[in-house]
Amino acid sequence: MTLRRAVAIAALAGLVALWPEGAFAQCAMCRRALASPEGLQMVAAFRSGILLLLLAPFAVFATVAALALRDQKRRNVSIDQRRPG
Image (cartoon, rainbow, N blue to C red):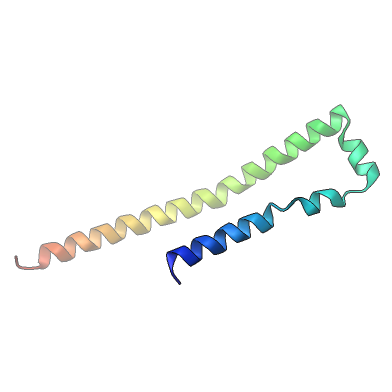
């Protein structure tokens, strides 16, 4: 898979995930309850909670990726040092 194709697929998946159709599926009573001041606080807390829960998987992925890159660089350096030159 080429990089251009992977970027195109990722962009398409992002657009599909952000499509607003699902947001209009609320019932009228839920929408009215969330429009109140208490509801707005609840929505803000919910969004903050989602971002907080997303932080852990991204931190784990970034740590694993950084360790893999560091290991790859170390292997390349050790291979270059073994070559007679």
